[in-house]
Image 1 (cartoon, helix red, strand yellow):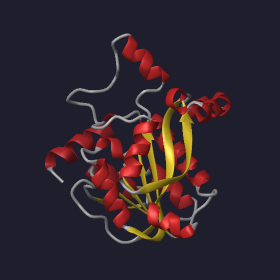
Image 2 (image 1 turned 180 degrees about the vertical axis):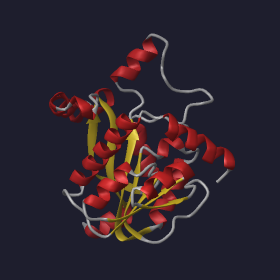
Image 3 (image 1 turned 90 degrees about the horizontal axis):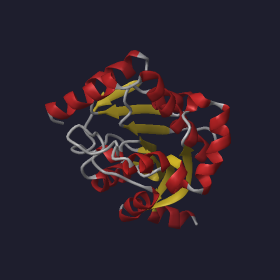
Length: 230
């Protein structure tokens, strides 16, 4: 990990809208838990855990949860709330231990080589283990309208997203990494704070995710593991 990377993500977390980021993180964790059947047990490693909002939800669901993040400030905050977390750079380091589930929620788009990072995640799985990943849909309806009027909202020297995905690009990435999408669900355009309206509009995202989903949550297994299971 370089000092520049740590500094960039220390600033990234300090500038986030805390309540919105926390709500989104926990909502993505909730979607992931539903893909897993509602609960969890065994060891879970969350890479890119940030201040630990999703990690906390995984721990509440029954996992023995541990987090990693490149930002020392975010890791310090997670630890202050009683979570187990450590500083690590997924782009440069192999992951510690062997885990039943590895979560990477809104992480891969921040990496220069997400394919290599997925390889590191696979290496750190126990036999029969799975990966829970989420990726933003950079070309949802609001983003397309912004592009149309000349305000795309991504790109530039300060954009933390180094790779830009839509649902098709996400599946190409997983396929290249030797991962099969066992299940997936879509986070719709409405934020969690919109409550009932979000519950009414989220089904539209399942129908047309390329346009009406802000992000996708994917349950993944290595092809060889999935093949043995079947």
